Length: 58
Length: 265
Image 1 (spheres, rainbow over the protein chains, first blue to last red):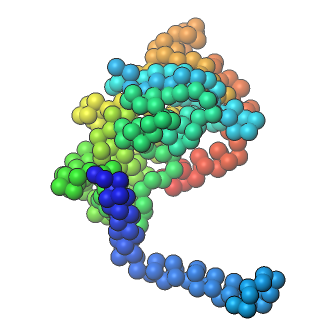
Image 2: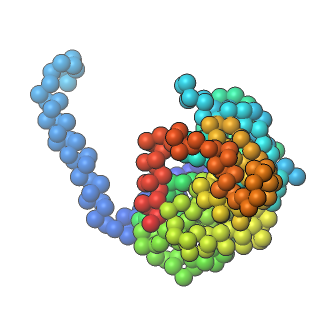
Image 3: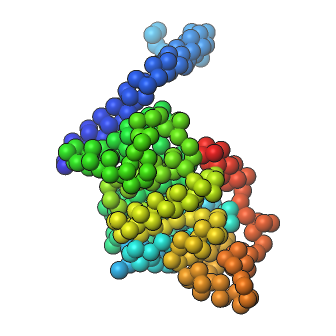
């Protein structure tokens, strides 16, 4: 098997594993979504207050 | 035929010499036990042999391939059951095996037959479609062994395979390892703390202490080397690693061992 095909196949195997885990316990989707949402809320709030890094008006 | 050979294999972590000039060879078909107290360097040695940790100096060959220069070829030859949990509790036994089958590049046409054979061989076919989170410690270990041997490796590394298991589960693990050995002629290289297990199951034993091999031989040779009538392997261990109670194991190692025991109990 060529290295690229092998790489893609292994990536799909891991993706399938994660999908199966979610199928067994869909509530996991919610708990996984909470953490990035929290980061967005907390860090987003912090970074809007901080002006120490020059962003060139962005 | 020699399947594993190390030559002055050394690993240093800053000023700590974890493994010091380890030189040994293992013949095909052997059950080779690496014994020693916590912190002796057993797990570090296994990590180097399984290409997970580069050696500071020295060489090792697994199945004729150099662990440093031909790491990818070496990885195809062995199976590895680490001390930490390697099966996912959120998947069924069969699903865990299927992931490993794909990671080992087993042809798709063969996957289902390999899975069925491995589950049957390890005596967990009846529970294959249950979530691993509901398995007992012994069943998890047998599933992990099935995972590690799906690609029919020549050599199987087991890091503390029966730690945290009750005596019945430990016996079951050894029974299934014997079947595996008989069926595929697999060579087993393991670390353990249980002397009676090593005595009963290993063809040769090396006792490691403070990073060096203090003694090596068959269980009966080692027992004879103590020069004490009615000696057991426990006496051999005490003889070669006598002050291990005072020096063996760091806080981190003790915590890791207890974590593994808790997960499997």
